[in-house]
Structure formats: C-alpha cells, structure tokens
Length: 425
Image (cartoon, rainbow, N blue to C red; front, side):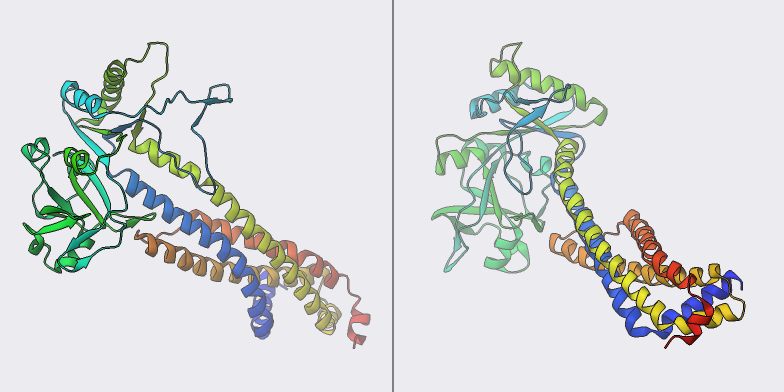
C-alpha cells in the first residue's frame, strides 16, 4: 500500500466523522486563535506606537526634564542598566526646564540646518463652549510656537498658523482639533474660522483647524487645542510649567552631532558640573519606539504561554479522540492486517489522521486569530496586520501537536492482533 493510498484513506476517514472532526478542529483552533490573535493585536499596537511616537520623524528629537515613562501592567521607576548589568538610579533631579532656559536655548542653538520649537502642556480637563454648546471637561490644551505644528506632524485643513507677534503678545488665538470644530460648526471646517469660542470661559479666536488624527492609546488628538505657550502662562498660570524643546534637523546624517550640541548647550544653561550626569532627557523618535516595543514584550510572552497551554489541552483531547477512534475501528484494523496490511501502514494512517485534524485546526485558528487581532487594530485605527511568521509557526506547532497526540493511538492500533481484532465486538 503506497503512501498516497494511506493519505487518501486518512482523508476519507476524517471526512466521514464530521462531528468528531469538527469538535477536535475547534478545540485546536481556539488554542491557535488565542496565540495568533494576541500576537496580531500586539503587532497592531507596535504599529500604532511607531506612528504615534515617530510623528516628528527620524530627523528630530525632543528634550524633556525627565524620561517618558512607557510601561504596561504596573508602575515603573526611572532606572537605567549599566554595562555591568546592574540597575543604577538615573541622575534626574526632577528639575523642570523653565521658560527662561527654553527660550535661551532656542535663541542660542545655532547648529546649521535645524529648527526648534518650544511647548508646554496646559491641562487635560478644559471645557470648550460655543453659544449654548459645550464639551465635556476632557479637552487637552497645548501651548507652542510657530514651529510647533511642523515639528509635531500636525497639519491644517483650514485657516493658518500662529504668528510670532501673536506668540510674543500672548494673544487669545487658538488652533482647534477636528472633533471640536465638527461638534460646534459642522462641515466644512473653514466655517469655524474667525469665530470666538470660550476655553474655560475665556474667549479665543479660532484661526486654524487641525487635520483629523484619531485616537492614540486613550489620547484623542482631535479633542485638543493649541495656543501659544505665552498665552497659557498668562491665562492658565500654575507654579511649575516644564517646557519641551523639539529640534528638527534637515540632514539626518548630522542628527548625532545636533543632539550632542543641544546637550552641551543645555548643560551649560542649567550649569551642570562636567562630572555630573545630565538632569534632562533627550528623546529620539526611534528610541521612544524601541522603549514602547520593549514594554510590549511581556504581552508576547503571555500570549505564547496562553496559546501553548490551550494547545496542550487540545493535544490531550485529540489523543483521547484518536484512542476512541482506535477502539471503534478495531475490526477495520483487523481486516487491513488480515489482507496483508503491515503494522507500519496502520500506524501511518492514524498518525496522518491526527496531523490532518491538527492542520485543519491551525488554518481555522489562524484565520480567526487574524480577524480577532485586526478587530483591535480597527479600534486603534491602524492598517490591516498579518503576522506572517506566526502563521508558519502556528502550522508547525499544530503539526507537532498532531504528531505527538497521534503517536500512542497509532502504536496501539499497530499492535492489534488481526484475529482478536476481527472478533472484537
């Protein structure tokens, strides 16, 4: 009996027991779905991180008074790892970057082919109102300068940017997110231009409307306002505003030198001793994304563990079903052996049946996993994600599961005595 004949017979047997096959395939599919689904969702999150934190581009960097804290599943501390592998406390004195320091930096940073922008965060509980309409107290407000839009990848669909004179005189002008404009004025967006809205009861003139951006990990970039940093300090004063300094380089090849020059200038402005570490953080887009990816690693490990545990259960279920199949087909096995079928042929048949069922489960699980994972990508507003590597891993894992689950039933079937098997009731 040739292998092709054994394979064909196995296919017919699998197709002839539709209910049993369907149940087993479903068990295996859920294991692979859990694994591929979570991996797909994580890849969607990675993609969103890349889009969100790399918005300034690969040729830009930002200076903050402390590192961005990107973590999942609990708090974290500002720690760095030394070359020896020991954790050391980062020399960060929580000393904010003041307006004087930021403006001095902007005026004296003279690296060729660069643009700088200063900005501050002006609360996230603002209420915006127009006539009788008003928003919930969840509108975010940022203060920037004339370069803020360019260095943070914001685009205008109507109106204009702030001018340097408006920034110096701290005028009550603002650039508004698409969601707020749509709520108050409808479409087209330019209907809102030159109208006066109120931010926490303070009147502001709308001079521009931002392009629709969507939501990024809880931050709705269409539910925000931008005015000048001088205006925020005047109208929404608080004790400690810390400035963010953004720098964009025309030539990416000179980025490292630009970062070095910026660090040296700010260390001099903040009067940091030559032997002390910098008490501020320089974030490059690629390093921010890398931190975000590293924070997601534990989710990948968790997904793998969950999927493997489910697959172990599926393997046990498959083995039990194959054992039942051996018991039910004892006479069939006896007949095959009686007409000259060898033990090897019987083993092959049961092993192939187990592998076919496992691969069918893998295919179904992969399809469901990709659909479930991409449902999450729709929520994040990212593109369709296909984890190609895990598709092949899933098929390989399920083939191994089928092989392991089918070995014992195959051996048991191969050992059946043909005479006793034919007499089996």
